[in-house]
Image (cartoon, rainbow, N blue to C red; front, side, top):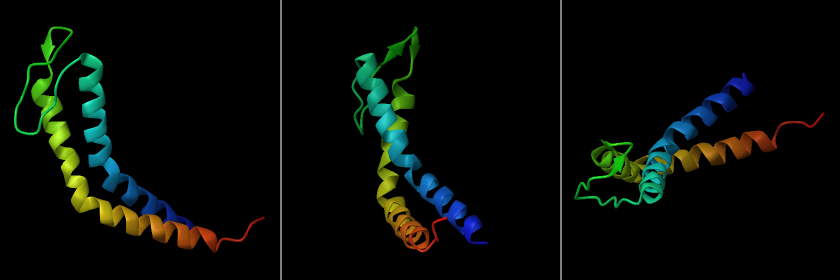
Amino acid sequence: MRRALLVLLALIMLLCCAPLISGLMAHGMARFAGCNVLRGHQHACLVFDRDIGPTLTRAAVLGWTFLATGPIAVICLVALLALGAGTPRR
């Protein structure tokens, strides 16, 4: 039962951090491709003759939802640490 709760908390924390990961990856990909990613403007970003600018902009804006999901992730992290600290070492 305790292991299932730990796994559930870890999955919730991972899902809550997904917007942050998405935003960071979008900015990293844009930097690697030599493009700009701004919140309000879509810039053309050609990678292998395909424009991924709108996709990168959407992913970067999605990163802002971490402001809503971040506190849930912190609560899950605290719960994981509290439950993990009480497990006996074998």
